[in-house]
Image (cartoon, rainbow, N blue to C red; front, side, top):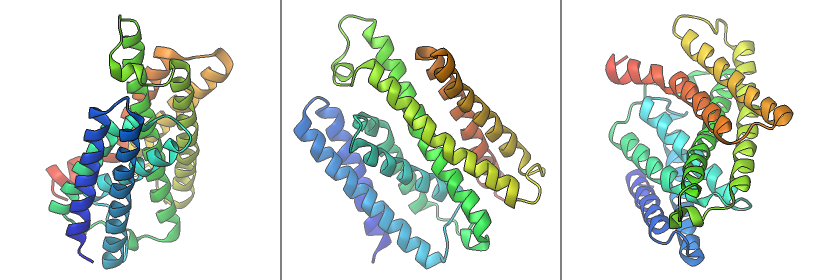
Length: 264
């Protein structure tokens, strides 16, 4: 099957879905059409990834391929969440990012970082790390949307986009649900790293390890504060974004420098 055709179809479906969400933000019929297009985009993206995996006999974890894989997982998790949670508006940010990352992977293919070179233990660590990052990515976008909603509700009248969102309390509850799921996988990732990686504080890993641990501390601290002291609002938003920024630096900072700047 032609991988370029699959990737192209996925990119256009992502972008078409995004446009429909933006243009018909408060019309449920068009929202359903947008979600059908999004499912088409994710399924073709997944099929493209599966074919490339088969061709390479493993996952490709170069910078753009990893970004594309993460974006696909984020989009898939969002669509699954939409089945029982009103979070489809996040597609405005997630779907175009997925389209861009897939396009970059298609044009800057690099097969020098294949997962087939790792054993099952290391593969488990890498994949749980990616799932954790994807879940917390959605949580960070939810926090941004929550901050925007909070700011708009203080102005009169709020914009149509804000009026179409669920109540502020519901949005906040969804944020903490996403954080909880993300922390589970982040914990598994860190534990598997300490168990299976010989020296997690080696020179090329120390920044990723330290930043990931700091992010874990921030996220678990936020959930603990929510449970014991009722933390919410701006505190939840700020802690979520700080924790995700640390994870972003941990997961992609070194890849950006090594692969795109130093060409290693």
